[in-house]
Length: 468
Ligand code: URA
Image (cartoon, rainbow, N blue to C red; front, side, top):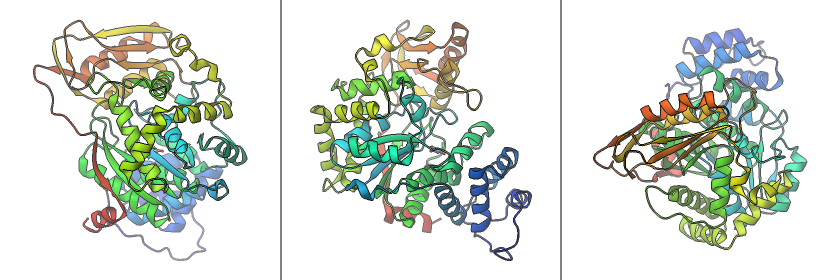
């Protein structure tokens, strides 16, 4: 991972550029300049660079790393690869949240309506499943009729009507990320700080946000496993977004187990609707209290940065009130309806859930759920049919895994640990085998891991990066 490499200048701003030269340069560890990076992003967006060359460049960038200057240039070039949204006409501060990727990570369905119910606009451009992690768009599309690919005019109309809208990259909106994101997913080039930063921030900056809250995952289910790499990613993203004019904070949060109970598509949406309906879980290792808590913390920051609360703590209280009085639920339902979704499926959450095959995995010994290899669990979810094997494949809205016992829970031999929902019976065996390998049951309870660790503001990010 090259953090300090400086950008070189090319001979002339008019020298013709060739992708083969840019790949070779990156492969050999040389830094690319702004023009070369812009060439790659534009070529990805307009289709002039073929997928094989983009894939080769991604692998070279993954192995050699991107410098701070290269990362910044790639972020801005990807942001500028399509049209941009201007939230000025919404008459509200536009604030969003984005996660670096996790398993069962569904806070978007909670924070967007919570923050919108408290008076900030949430124009959220999201992604699909990436690597072992699920995708916000795939989960939303489990709702029959929900349209993620809106035009800019439709995006604006939904935001005016509901305060929040969750949409995809399109050929118009951040097209470079649309192409590179899908290619990274197929070429094992996801886990790189510069590429993650450019992918996330290109979408966020194209939405014209006033402020942004980043949820940087740490632990066994995060793309970057080492804490120092997570801190670097947090600092890199905060500094890059701030330099582009968006007030940003990053929270390091725990992904040493799936967030909440459900990991899949419909089952994640249903879990959020239950929470929005005020079905408050108990604070226990078996419950999904962590999902509620993290969503309120993230929404609290969004509300604070959006100028509706003096502190993140006050924002948390406002978000909690919007959860309790049903205001956030109302925003969510309105948004789903405005984007074409059939809200009648929420009448009976269980009745709508029709998996092809189901298997309960029982605890193989008594003890405490000690460790979870959450990345492996993410792959187990993907193998149920909830994720893709090949680009462009449809995903099964009903597939996924429901976790009954979470880290720290005491289980007895034979008690259910998880329920697997697969597309077909033949798809049950592999996730079941992965689950058995990925969950360790021990005689002693594990150390508790805090849900939220360090918070990086602009000053923290600058100090961190200058010390590297
Ligand atoms: N989310 C994104 O949008 N891109 C990444 O690379 C990782 C998480």
